[in-house]
Amino acid sequence: MVGPDRSRSFARALTVLAPSTTRELRHCALATLVSEREQIEPFDAVFREVFGGPGDRGAQRGQPGDPAGAFPDTVAGRVPGLRKATADAQGRRPDAQPREAHVPLAASPLDRLADRDFADLSAEELALLADVMRTLVLRTPTRSSRRRRTAHHGARIDVRRTLSASRRTGGHPLRLRRFVSRARPRDLVVLCDISGSMEPYARAMLQLLYCAARATRAEVFTFATRLTRLTPVLRRAAPDDALARAGRAAPDWSGGTRIAACLAEFNERFGRRGMARGAVVAIVSDGWDTGTPADLATHMARLSRVAYRVVWVNPRTASPRYRPLVAGMAAALPYCDAVVSAHNLAALDDFTAALAAPRRRR
Image 1 (cartoon, rainbow, N blue to C red):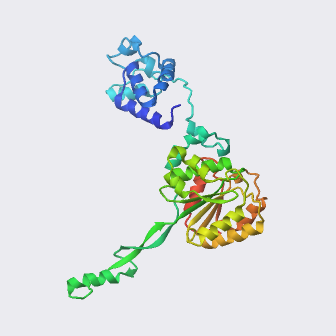
Image 2 (spheres, rainbow, N blue to C red):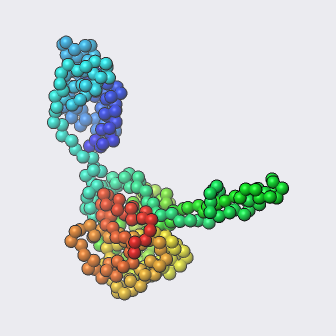
Image 3 (cartoon, rainbow, N blue to C red):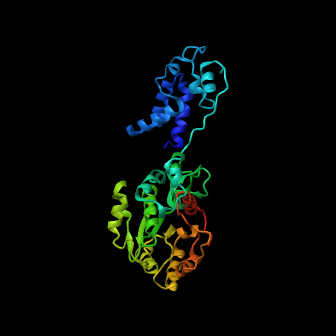
């Protein structure tokens, strides 16, 4: 399959090289559309079907009446606009209108997978999305830090720099030095449900966090029946075995769900230390909980008082018939600033936008 990027490279090569024979056209297409040796044979079969063989005498020498080296009708007539583009590049006008051919176009694998639910993807199909996920940037709102930078129109006076500069003027501070606080992105903390009902989506979300969140140094936790911190594992793992190491580090993979208990452990062990204070916290779960809704509401309220934003990622909300009838989801909703689905590649835009929102909406 040829994607839009290779098609664009082929079109650019045609305008630059201006091939005048079928053989030259094949070499141009071969250099831009084929990336592996195994693709040459099917490429030649399609090329012969559309343009004819590269050894065609008429294609190499031109048709009678055409200038030497001119683009033959057997090639230019089958690609709309190709004869005109080549003729313009060679400084002459085409002598005939191009004929259009119905060439079947196939979408690239990524185009076909963009709207498919993560739960329906195999491990091989999910691996194809890794390159796209690496291009996603998980941005969070900025916050003022204790670091400073000099600014001519800063609101605060830098006393130390002002007094230091006054030594050059006999101790008279003729010019006030000012500063502003540096801004840095808020921390990102992700709690990912790896219970049985969330296992297909957990694979995709952990892959996304590994590919896109390493630059942001996000903190990643998984939970089912217990809470597991995966940040050290994902940072040291290679791309090929990141999910395998994550599975070995979390022994409760595909187990039951104790959201309230795991959230209480997170608040007690990590939230009090400041990991969630002023951070954007994303919880990836469908809301199924074996605990009581009152306990989940208590711990969600505690988390919401510390975090800057709480984003709940529930793939089930993608269905238009979804209603928050699950007791755990209904108890958590009042303390969420945003609820998104992130159930496929196209829906990840809503997820990244929810993380980067500049203010609370609760």
